[in-house]
Image (cartoon, rainbow, N blue to C red; front, side, top):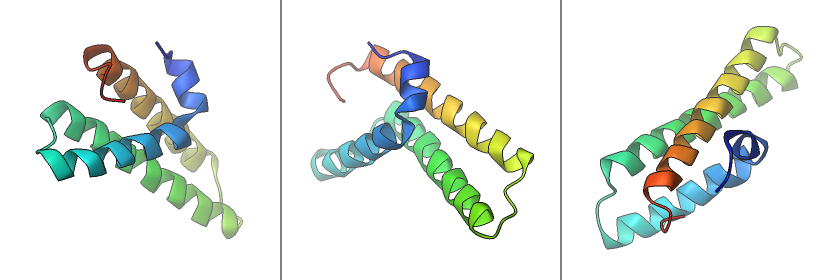
Amino acid sequence: MLTVEECMSRADELVQEVFNAFGGAIATASPTPEFSELMNKAFRYRNVIRMADNHREHGVLGEQVATEVESARRIFAEAYVAFLKNHPSLM
């Protein structure tokens, strides 16, 4: 079982794993509410990362954006660990 810290260090990879699983879930059935919530957190994390990349590209990456990235990463990691705990065979 992955820890929150391990998930945080692998967040980009795990977000992609969630997106891939979502594609498979859509093909076979509607996603569960729990999976939909995990997807929402994955999308939020991905959006915050893109925002940070845009700020970095323009040389305006501030502490607030860096804090948002860390927060979104932790929220996703916690949701991922909780989802795996309840649905270990889905990922």
